[in-house]
Image (cartoon, rainbow over all chains, first blue to last red; front, side):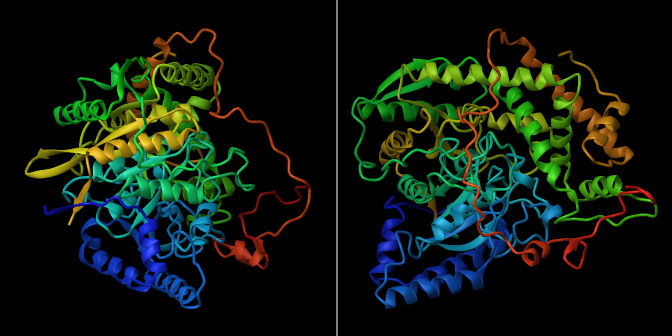
Length: 490
Length: 102
């Protein structure tokens, strides 16, 4: 595959070129639509391309510039939005038959904040149904394919957003991350994906999966782009009472300045024998890169790394079983055909069985089981106790280092259909779930490549930092990006 | 937490609690995969959790109360746009009460 090195100049540079008249927002939308026309059907990154809405939004941006107004810091920046984030334009399907025809009567808070800065939504991206999966194969509307090798998965659950960014269908995208659903697809598609601290970005308008774990975050082709989107959408929202009442830090002014005396922690457990040889090699190479930049490498231990998957697959399904109870066939979404004598109970059960795919039903049942009488203490309460210990383990590690470095995923992108056992799929998220369990921020960026079966596959590294220290995390990530400049399919 | 295979009856009970109506083939498939997943999850019992306070949420937050002032809301027409069945300004549902029920 032909590739080109990316300049890493962020989204403000795009907005500046639009505001200065060097390029129109309309021309930028048309260029993206042309790229989508060329590879869109092959990759299936989008559930819905909103061409006419994007053209209308671009015309508004261009008209504002003509009138001498400033359309905002993201003027003419083209975004793809994961299809579990509510938008009044197009549908919001969560890639589920249940919501196939659902149109949101309101916009998510993040959508309003980004559009108010002149950003343009070009489409809604594919995901694993209700964000439950690590490959985007669980979509009711068909799998998304990896732009680097279309026989492979893009990761998931935000696989459509990651693929759209890496294939240059848009400038940046939004995803949601409950256990790695931004970072893992970013790793497998070779772009940057950033999960902010829990509570930093409003979840209002994000269709809830695991409410104590979910967080909206950006995808971009560089760290700066992620930082810019983060700053534009972060901060307290009266419509989400779990948003933290804290000032959003300036993440941009010093982004390019390497951190002096940075201590990079390498958890022993992240150098696992389960890592593919290519992933292990890229990790050691990233460690060397930080050393050559003057960072101090610190060995740390996170012994509860492996138990994270078991902990997560109690907590997340428990929360999902409660959250997805709202899909009952009464107020919106799928309503099954009724038989004579059917009452409300039958309407609920038939509508849900017809509307939800196998993985969603599996997780609802798993969550219902671990919350049921007689099992609550053994499963759910115990998982919450382990959750506390995982958080304390991170807190302890961060007394010895500023950031943690490791692989985002133990393996590069795998073949479509390559993981049929649910637990084998769940293990893809071994390095990402504990970030959500602890509520801390994490970012994945490309740090190297593997050659597999004639294909070049990107390998991402993940950095994690203490809660609400996004400015530090993004600067540390930018250091690695400068040392290992990203490239994308041409 | 003991490792055990779920029975078909267990799965049907969980499905009922989940408001799902799986057919026989789905019940058997769920029995197999849920049993396998619960076997992996059973590793949680190997962790010493003595003294660990359950952590339901990553933020130490308390409920926030807003002033009780009416604000803008979505119109009923807009909200009903997605309703699978409606009568006038109401959602239509199957009969809930028996004849003469209160």
